[in-house]
Amino acid sequence: EVQLLESGGGLVQPGGSLRLSCAASGFTFSTYVMTWVRQAPGKGLEWVSAISSSGGSTYYADSVKGRFTISRDNSKNTLYLQMVSLTAEDTAVYYCAKDGVYFHTEPHYFDYWGQGTLVTVSS
Amino acid sequence: DIVMTQSPDSLAVSLGERATINCKSSQSVLYSSNNKNYLTWYQQKPGQPPKVLIYWASTRESGVPDRFSGSGSGTDFTLTISSLQAEDVAVYYCQQYYSTPITFGQGTRLEIK
Image 1 (cartoon, chains in turn red, blue):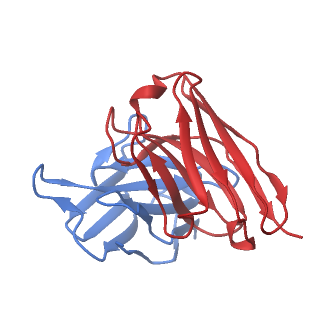
Image 2 (image 1 turned 120 degrees about the horizontal axis):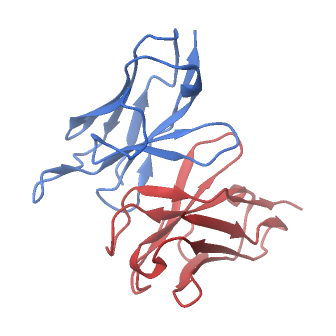
């Protein structure tokens, strides 16, 4: 059974930093693109970032480019999102998601999602 | 960036009736080399993550009831629920994966009339 478990969310002050983790199990983690998607309270879905199966290619939304860094450790089956210079606009539930296409370099659709971790940026 | 626009924003349909949600992309998401539309549909219920229903515009995900179907090509797509059930109350999103940044529609809220 595929499981994705996010952690690392919480309350952080504007300008602060946070690192999210997503522990994956139930599939061969190293063979799938992984993605972060966020959802502000009461709002729609916003794609944040993706990383290829090897970690060699990364992709970012303009809204987070230069502030967020996606990475993965295939030996630990874990996906990360390092977030710096956080603002109130970054307040959201952050989901990690598994790509639906095997062994590709670019994101496609997402066939499994974690339950999400809430990041609140407020003073 | 490819802009995805859904219509309507909200929809109320009687139980057993057909529900239709539209999604329009600002440019074609049909990849000519493989003739596939890079378009997917998700269902999101309150307090839950999204669940994939349809991918490649018309391929139903395993385990999804066959009352859900996807159609369309190029820039215009439709999600149809042939006979609405109470458990289908949710927000529905389309998403393109033709190019990064990946973009979602704004969502369509489906309710029971």
